[in-house]
Image (spheres, rainbow, N blue to C red):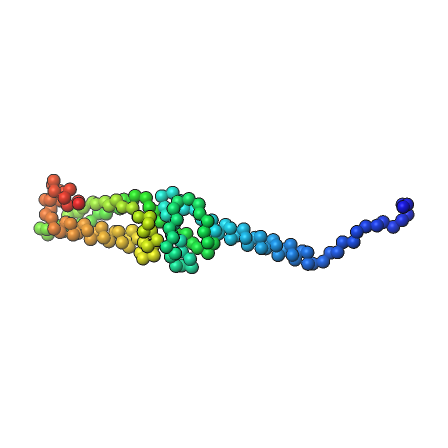
Length: 160
């Protein structure tokens, strides 16, 4: 071989098939990553996660932490912490006197019943169920007792 001989090299076949295959694999990889991110959910401390699939409650309740779920399911968090609901009401006593009362209710959601509560009542269960029942219980308790009983030593009995 001399410097005057023509150079020898490899022939590279540049066709669109290899690039299309690479783009297809990249697209599939992108979809896999999206599904993996959609399949991981996190439930905060002091909450329970209720799973729904296309709007239907599945009945599954997730405890706090990180969970791997079906990517088509949606996680809805409900607090299971002990909470306080304060209510100020003007209610009639047994004598017909209108009394202003400040009451409070301490409650928490049972984690085993969270899916049922979410399905039958919804995430606004406090406004839909607890507040109206508290108001009703206040009126019922004060209507059967005298005004004196509400502010005297019988107060504990009325509270129960």
